[in-house]
Image 1 (cartoon, rainbow, N blue to C red):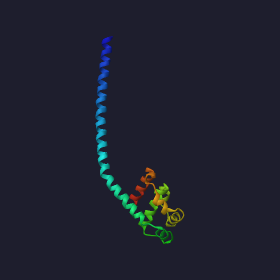
Image 2 (cartoon, rainbow, N blue to C red):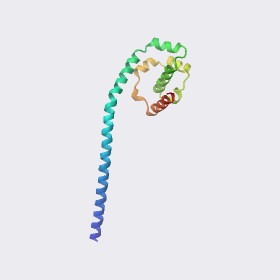
Image 3 (cartoon, helix red, strand yellow):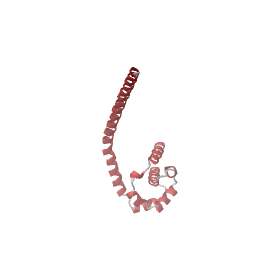
Image 4 (cartoon, one colour):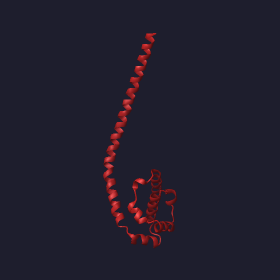
Length: 143
């Protein structure tokens, strides 16, 4: 009976060693992926930071007179309208509804929403990933 117990222990130990080896291989693979992602992030971060600075500079050029012109003027070029619809979708977190706004609806939101102040204070980290996905799909459809 002791011999049978010893054989069971040996089989169990072999299985544990095999599992341990498999886990070690998987851990190595995960560590390689982490390293690759960290490298990608290190390369992408400077470009992201540069874009953020460019957006801040662009936003600084938008003033109350520009907003008033948008609110009272006739329909702007399509790219301007799409940009404003996208901005409203991101700020209101309602991509489905706001990506298809008419120009009159955009003007009403700009008029009643204090959008200039909200744009300056907008927290980009508050955007839900599902909203970003919808906006990305919308922009790809327009391209």
